[in-house]
Each structure stands twice: as structure tokens, then as C-alpha cells.
Image (cartoon, rainbow, N blue to C red):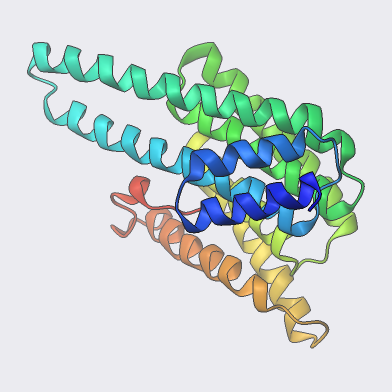
Amino acid sequence: MEEREKLVCLAKLAEQAERYDDMVEFMKNLARMDVDMSAEERHLFSVGFKNTIGAKRASWRIICSHEQKVAADRQTGVMIDAYKKKVEEELRKVCNEVLSVIAIHCLPLASTGENIVFFYKMKGDYYRYLAEFSTGTEKKAASDQSLMAYQHAMVVASSELSPAHQIRLGLALNLSVFFYEIMNSHERACQVAKQAFDEALTEINSGEGVYKDSTLMMQLLKDNLALWTSELTGGEASKGNGDVDMEG
């Protein structure tokens, strides 16, 4: 068994065993082989990091929630803030790690429209995760880098991928979440989500191609649009949505 095949096999096993730190290590080693990843390989690469960062993002949100509840208790607040900073440092480490691997080993080797869009989208995602907990100039820098990566991915997706392509829909979904959560631009978030949904629906209704894998992304776009539109029209549906995973 060749090393590349062995690493894929081990990553799949680690995923089934829910050992995501191991999964990340296997896929980092594969990326460092400087190969243009297959669809299966890039999926494993993404899933490993997403589960690792997802657990830490959830922890950070819970800690922030508790911090708000004890705002009047200064001593407890200081203790919680110190713990929150520890989790933020872990988040920063994972984000910087994946961004480094993408910049050095993934994007330079990406030769197809799918791979280019996939890795620029992933770059946008991890800069967005940095922006979630950063403040001041660090938040501004992360936000700017995230937007640039998403926009680059959108340009390539518009010419290389069909409107109903799963990766293009996932990109639009996450870009809309970026506008909603990071930029606090709710109208822009709705515009991005609605345009992506409408264009995909038009293509699907034309009867060309099979779009089974796009169904989930379209449903997430539709759900977010309903939530955000309700907020823009004065509804209450969006309360507490900061703890909901609205992205792809």
C-alpha cells in the first residue's frame, strides 16, 4: 500500500473512531506530499479540521454565555475570562495551522475549478473563525482576509461551477453567514443567500443534471433566509441563533 493510500485509509478509520486530532495529522501529512487532492481527500482534510475547530468554537460560545451571566461578579468574571483566553489561543493555533497548510500545500497544487474554489472557501472559513473571537486590528485583518478569500472563490466558482454545484452553494452559504455574523450586514447576507438559492433552483428546474448533493445546502440557505428575513421585518425568530450552525 502506497503512503498516500495508507494515510487516506488511516484518516477514514480515525473519523469512524471520532479521533479527529489523529485524522487531522494524517491529512496534514498527505497535504505535505504536495499532491492535487482528490474529492475524497479534500473531504477528509476538511472534516478532520472542521470537527476539531467545531468543538473548540462550541466551547468558546458556552464560556462567553457564562461570562455574560456573571457580569456583576468581578472575581468570577476574571476567572472565566482567563479560561476563555486559553480556548481562544487553542482556536488561534488550529486556524493558523490549517491556513498555513492551505497556503503552502493545497492552493498551489489545486488544478481544477472545484479544488480552487474548495480551498479558497476553506481559507475564508478559517479566517472567519479567527474573526469570531478576535478584537480590534486583529479582527479587522482576519475579516478582510476572509472576505478576500470568499470573493476570490466566488469569481472562480462563477466561471467554473454550475449554480447548483454543491461546493458553489456551500461557498454562498458561508459567505452569507460571514456577512451576517462578522460584518453585521444582514441585508447583504440575505442578498447573497437568495441569489444563490434562486440561481440553483432555476438550474434544477431546467431538468439538467443530478443535484442530490446540493439539497442540504439549498435547505440551509432557505432556512437562513427565513430566519434573517424574519429579523429584518421585526420578527423574533432569530433570537439565540448565534449558537446554531448555519454554515456548510
